[in-house]
Length: 618
Ligand code: BES
Ligand code: ZN
Image (cartoon, rainbow, N blue to C red; front, top):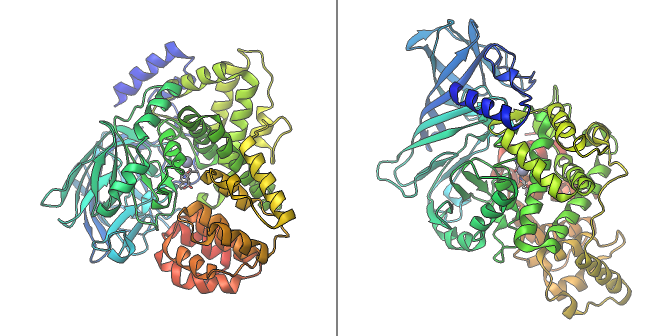
């Protein structure tokens, strides 16, 4: 591995100035200070993981060994992160040693300190997870699509991998891995690695991940799933009853990979598959390398929500290839990814679609800024998350302001220059990490100074709010939607010929832009015309429910639809939007009534957010 990174660096010297030449020398301090990990990687670092575990659905436990190849700088110990794990034994080069577990910290967990010698090569940790694990969600058959078999998935980002594997859990660390995972024989296991495409009889699956990845990207899912290819390098894993629907929905996957490669260079991960998880999955998607994890709520039947796939695919460059060094640099992952996502969508479906998506993000940004008006520091691109749970501070500013920054840059320097710059950025920093400061230096040298352009980069990155020179995004289609709202408010009727060709994005824009003064009677007129309460599109339903809660709309049994939605769907963005609407309308009691029943269906990251929002005490 060392030799390879050395060669990459040599190659990089010729391509760029190799800003990180020094950092690849073994004795230099390669890693920046990271407040969300106990590891001291400048002293001793893991380079490869061999995981050998069994998955026990009866006791809801993962148990086995994590072995690491290590490289050290004459250190006398190597420190791993662990949280809610039970460690029974540690070996160094095959010999048992006395390890220590540090004090427990609510956010970080415990340091696992292992004594080593300067020539130690390998450590092995015997461990098991406990029922406090935060990464894992164990689902009963009832919580799956087919309701026959249980399901398990992991969520590593931001600092949860340490709750199912003892590891140096900082995004600056990169490991290759091999894994052997034993599961009940009727289930199949898949990871962010080279995956099986069919079930085997003994329930023992082996995995190999030859590209080095950050620990937050190590992922596992176990369930009754089948595979169907979309192309020779893309395809879908899903429960049997969902597989055909998902396959249709995501049938443009290969085209997306081609579009992405045409923009910013070769796809470096060989395979790009998606696994559709049960509805409690807390995110829209998670960019686990080679195998994106996705919510079933994007299966709308008409491919209208597949920008999510473009987003997770884009992370194969921004995030997985060039990784934020610390969670304070999170915008380097998400802002670039949203920008890239919009470019993929534009390439496949045209500017109209891309601009509608961008404008929805622009409105999100306005709402977020309003929400953070008392904590403006949270609206900076570069965050300061020290002492906080990164998951609380990593808000969507990184996405929407990050996007607007990059779009503004693009419009300032011109698309051709900007694309060439981004392509080189990914190529010259592939399989390495990036800090905000190093990015600024790289931007100045390779784009701005080169083109003699002055740009207020520092203001965009280090100041709250949005600078004056922001790109202006427009959409004719959304203007028509706005006119439709205005004419409805005047006449209390909508000409259906205007709405018959509306896409999901137009409906979402329509519903989100009702005036504050809209009445329940007016909402009922709209509902009677379009039955939004029973929309099969999760996004349209969600924004409609948000308005129903805010404006006391009660007709058509909408309350029942809302509570059954919240009971089933655990996607944090949806769930928190709706609970926030209750809270902002002084209906916390009503929210708690629903939450009491739905909470058990959610993953820990959704629970943490909603507990805090509603002041829920378990
Ligand atoms: N990497 C994120 C999900 C994430 C962020 C997990 C922070 C944990 C901490 C993923 O790529 C993402 O951004 N998902 C979005 C979808 C997207 C289309 C904006 C989501 O889940 O809504
Ligand atoms: Zn993302």
